[in-house]
Amino acid sequence: MTEGSVDEVPGDKPAETVNADVMKRRAVLGVIAMIARTVVLQFVVFGGTIVLARLLEKSDFGVFTTLQFVLTFFLFFGDAGLGAALVQKKEEPSQRELASVLVFQVIISLVVMAIVCVAASWMHLFWKDLPEGSTWLMRAISLSLLLTSLRVVPSIMMERYLKFGRLAILEVLLSVGFYLGATIFAFLGFRVWALIIGVLIQGFVGVIAAFVMSPWRPSIAFDWKLLRPIIAFGIPFQLKNVIGFVNGATMPVYAGRVLGMAAVGVIGQAQNIAFFPLRLVEIMARVTFPLFARLHGDKELFAATLARSVQICALGTLFFVGLLLGLGRNIVHVWLTDKWIDAVPLLYIYAGAISIGFLSPLVASALDAAGKPKVFSRLAIGWTALNWMVVPLTTPKWGLLGFVGGYTVHVVAGNLAVIIVLVKLIPNAKIWPRVRASVVGGCAVWAAGRYLVSPWANSWAGIIGGIAALVLLFAGIVALLDRSAIKDALSIIPKKKQ
Image (cartoon, rainbow, N blue to C red):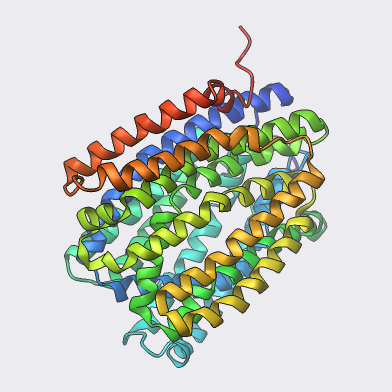
């Protein structure tokens, strides 16, 4: 058999039968691995963000955000949701399927890179305050498209077989590569180029690490008959991502043109901090997606797993929301310096919005895994249209506050619609009993942080001590109101039988 025609399943296939119990045990280990990854990652991100925020200017972050937006725009045309399609696929993908996916992704990436290189010359016609040299910044960062496509198959196989421990290591290495490279070049005075170089270093590290942790021998094949059903599932799945991209484009496109690059930098910094809990939500959605794909035939277990996933995410999200509302100004003042103090009101608005906004990624993961990606796509189209209607009305009148306030309207409205859909399609998922203790705990953290902790938390030691006290307060309230909350949250899957 030639390399291009082999049909055997690639390496890294689990030896045991992948039944529901095995998948559930792996999912629990996956949650643990990804949470551990998040803890480690946040030390990297925390340190890197503080250093870069102190070394670089607001406009540098604004330019970088804009360039990433342009790159992501083109990237969507070359993805087609193939990764999610292979993860969701019940049958084992053959070597020929994987080789066809790799070749398809590389070809599309090269085409997109060529388009980006040409289109970069005209960016300044839309964003008037882009600095000189932005054309070459855009062309340089486009190389990351090719690097991402090269690691797609090893990453898919790790995710399909729930090898989240390896994925956790890979993603830590990616962040270390970016922040280490960006920090070094920022110290050397490279300004926004430091961020671009960090992205490229991240890309090279990712390719090497992915193949080391998920050995797979690439081969050259392009079988359209095998690709067609994969793309048929992937396009509706990717449509949801495209809609999300268009939704988020209000910041670089509208705010970038109307308010300028420095404003984009401030808005982006506030959003990144406030949306931090969504990283936990993304982990949960990612880990449970392959699990849901195998459990959706059992309605009771499917609904219970979704409810417990929401419970886990509510614990982290609502604590963090309370923390930001109570100590947001102190955190920005001490950690980022007063250069970023105008981000504080925006931080409060974003934080309030995600107190409900964390639901949609979890419900989307469940519906996608159940083979119903179009349901969520319709919802996403609706709230994206709402966002683009409201933001242009509020921004000219109230500036930064108007933009963020207008943006969060669709977050709240959209997630209220998600709750209605959830009740209709998955009525057995009883969400409120799972989250009410976290709601009360989050409100208590907000009040205690604002009135008891913030007056004295004006140093690094004060902030850390205050956070520790608020963690104890939150945990105590949750334990008092719902003693089974933590136990149930960690029991998404039964323990391994002895």
